[in-house]
Length: 98
Image (cartoon, rainbow, N blue to C red; front, side, top):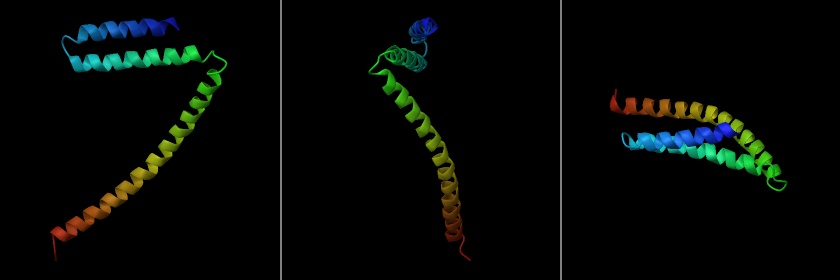
């Protein structure tokens, strides 16, 4: 648990140093530090009797949603490819009349 605090502090200090040279990279490093703080925050509330079961339930929902999104993406990519090929065939046919 302490390694997250150390990593968060190290990321924030690194972002302060990097900000002089590349502000965009510093912003990205601060986003990573914020994510570590957020995970630590959720882990702190996981011990609570009222909030702990809700966090477990949300974690299970994210697992279900992620599997749905993967399956949905497979079908979406397939249909998008089919529609793209169909439209491109019509465009080629219209641009090169017989």
